[in-house]
Length: 318
Image 1 (cartoon, rainbow, N blue to C red):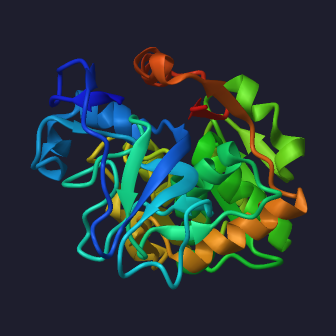
Image 2 (cartoon, rainbow, N blue to C red):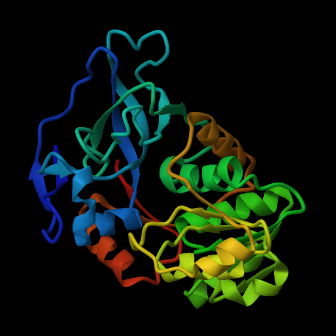
């Protein structure tokens, strides 16, 4: 089988022939039907600060995956069977992850996975949505609900309305929160009504008078983090998710005077993903997507790098 192999920061990925994986006793092999592209893939290609996550080079990236189980390890048969439709949460208990470290990802057509990754994908949820939920959805939901504590009546800001932010903002809206979005792409701002936003602007600082109780920064470009801190109301909380840049220069004055809380959030739980699949099955959560082929993965990552993409890019396999 052919997979796009990552050779390190500043190096182009190469489409190479690799061996098909086989399941260990506590593993399954999944035939990938859909694999999402993420800004973190671009960061890994561009930013040497990411290289500590890749102790094995070359390897196959791609951490947003959904598909069908085609092989079951000896210790897995009581829980999983060939033919099960699954989504794959990327994180492993030891903080390794699918698409990083020793676990090849979905930029190739088959991948190994364990109980720590597998969530049953309802028949009513298409593979493209199933893949989106595994990282963009899972990370968004966990940051907004589990870490941020979003609930009905809260005043919430969301920075970045792309793949993650669209889902996080939509979930908050469905919960009954008053949601304000910040997005630099004017075409994405046009989705405000679809998401259920109370207001939308280019910068979250536009809503400084709203005394926001929670801001979730799904962009993470340094300046966005700083803007969130300047905007939060007293006792407000910033949840940092986006890793567009790995540093930010911030004003500590509002942190002290407004007694702010800053929390990081990474990935989520299998329970979060199952809850997302229920929302998707209901038809209330249907984010925009752009379907591509495996061959188009590198050029599509270039599009992400350039900006302006509306919705998640999803590579579809037969």
